[in-house]
Length: 325
Length: 198
Image (cartoon, helix red, strand yellow):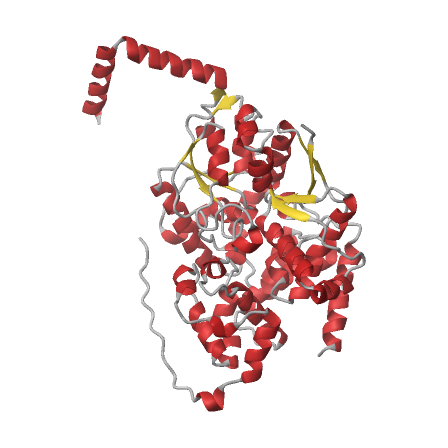
């Protein structure tokens, strides 16, 4: 199979507060044999603030990057950040469906964008282009203590006509990727509820309330950590978790990992390599029990064999357990 | 632990033959590309809106106010600024109206007409865009500091400082891209064009 190659647009957050997303995504792609080439001199996609100014202006900030990628002749751009993704997809759709809009946008640019770039989220290329089989094949370590709530955030899959990926109400890609690693995923009802997005700074009280609900539902689902695919979601859920506790009288202490960090752990990279120390709520205790997959399987087999051999002993053990509880 | 919100809305009697701003309806339809008259007030958008507790007018009511051309009420509303474009309304609208895009269009018009009810939100967005214009990319620390100074909320998120510092999550200097002047030109060309078209 020919090696896959993508233009990799990391986005501004991944240079700062979401550095660990960039680090872990690059490592995982290396393991999966995917080549990432960074577009030269990329600029900010414009994100939410630009589309409060003007539709054409917002599309131009995004399309400057699409024009750069178009010249790379790679065809597909991938970005881990849903906000960048949405900016690219909306600019691309607007420009390819409406010639007048395209001309207006290109008037603001030095190099015109002709509509030749497909944008996909990093989750999408992992799930669809790499595929679950290959994801499972590369696993070297088991993470027996993780119980994950997969949180997609609001715009990874929506609106469906623009996102064109997975289900807008009950997305499953991240759940399946994590399951393919052999890690336990819990049913989680708040997969796509908004965390408060970019209002963390100007409207903190509002974000604290919304984030509180997202965290509560994860705990209710029996999860002991949350997997995310968005730098802003991660920031609101992790960096602001103590603010939420203070504002809402709660006591959450639930780690919020990028799904690529979980993949990296299953692929044997060290917590240090995956920038796990950059998480504010430490995932240390949960990943301490990580063991090589062969050892884990042997342990499980031994357990199963022991249970088979001495059914009476097992019954006694279970009875003791029931008594304890 | 969840708060239960009961909100009632004062109803004004509006004489529609006198107070309907037809040009405004036309303008929003044209700029958003959406057919506003398709909305039949099912309320599905409001039912799913995570921000409706904070809105002065729920999003379905904004749609109704639009259909009746209530320009000032809409442009002065907090709702249009508190919308985060989470796309739930657009995803669930049975009439396939891109409601989030309509809200976006309303913010744009409010900004253009200098009628911004939520000054802090606009200030934060502007601080963000200033960073893009100067460096070509977002410099998170700079954006926050610019906002803090301009808004007068000097200590906003100061409690997060030690966290991001010890975690090595921030850069002390912005990355200025080579083509930052090219990005700044997008801003300039847009401004010139906007001026020309009034």
